[in-house]
Length: 410
Image 1 (spheres, rainbow, N blue to C red):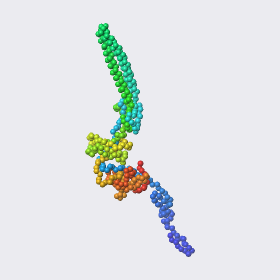
Image 2: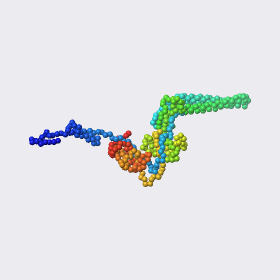
Image 3: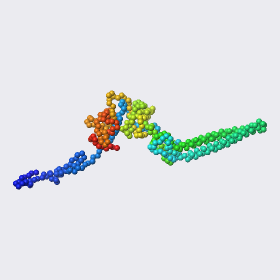
Image 4: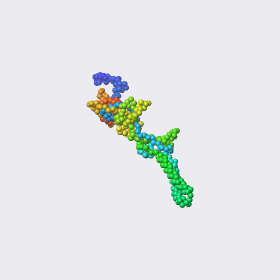
């Protein structure tokens, strides 16, 4: 901009505006609109517009207690949770199901009624057996009356024979009648016993129409419905059921694994084992070997091993997949400090050569420097900085900082 001075005053004709600063010019527009973006806030020509940033999503895992000092993993294997007591409860007779009193997930106790079968035919057989016993008992009473009369007649005949009044043939005939009646009474008594046995069978058949739980447990499968036929043996065709329900004794849950026969010598009864359910991989469950089944599978070249849990938990369910680590006793290294916790490998981050982890505190992350120990298949030992139970970030975006608010991946 230039200004020229005249006699009469200021000469304004010399004033000029740079073309780049005109409002219609491209450069002028740039200077007219000032944009500044700081921390999600944008200024447009003095106007403030805030962009809402979403909190990053993270995945967590709980820090576990470290394994007991002096133990090391000797062998790994996988298998399933199986109950020692598991039964598909069926009726002892063939019959029509008239009622089912259980469903999946229901806890039952020993002797509890699970279902009932049609008992109309059985009751009729029971009544028939009772009627037969009553008839036989009545016939027996009649025979005993006749026997008493025949014995009196025999005594009179014996006296008359001594007095030479009647012949010996009359005496023999009287004796025959008495012996015949005695034999018929014995037969009648046996018939009464047979009738009582038939009554007992009919009563047992009637009892068999009520299906009861053989032991306490939880119903895991309901196998029959009202109106279906049930039989202790399969009748073929798929129209006859062979069971009412399947019951599992949850107190008998254990682990069954197949160990390669080449390594079975490393497994002994009573050996300590760490188990991890596929559904809860971060949960180390203390266990021990119950028994090594003394036979091998020639097809798979494996030996079955059964492992007992030290303590059962409601989270442990039948047929869950599980991985186990057989532990071997070894002497701890002299002077080695015990680890405080065990965390997944993905939880440890590095800044240069300094390791650290992010802990969750309410809805924010807290950066925590740690000192690492030994690394194993179960994770990394933390010698200092983390305690068992701490919620550790195992997956999250890069660039997280201390105190940042996060969202948990459910």
